[in-house]
Length: 240
Image (cartoon, rainbow, N blue to C red; front, side, top):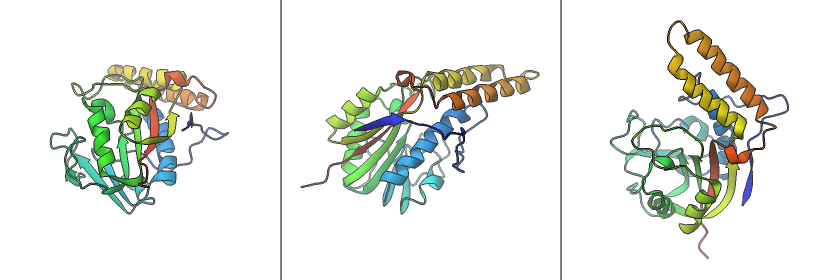
């Protein structure tokens, strides 16, 4: 299994033109780092029919377009997001798709919202073709969100255990930050409670400054144990 960190180039510039539609002034830091690493993994591992489990509003449809032939979004009827981007109504435990249907599975920051993560990973194994890959991200240090459906946080060891137990081979595992990014981003989320007039402009300037400094320092910060999240690639073994 390969492991590593997300780095920026020597000038501290992210050259990707993709902008996540969920990205805002107070949280662009983690989206930039997450989405840059995700695009790298998609380029190397995505192909054919991609099933996006817990797709929400399919924020990665534009990013995946050059790597896959079809992007199918799966989500449940009671989602908090708009339903117009969902292609298949199902759950992470029962996508309603056929066995060995997908070449690639995408699942971004969904696993923490599932009370039965092992069942969801078994469902990924069922619908994935032999040799196909799951590309998944899950948080480690992160605040409560989308309550009450927020159940777990995941270490790299926990993720590897869950995927090994389901019959996958973990081929990549990446910490998405060190302490500086995790602390800086959470501080920006905390500061959003003060975004009321007349402090709104000042708070936004402070949030931008914190995120910019953390983004630049992330290149040298190797405190992976404090990562806000991990990005994983797991492959379903081919049949002999």
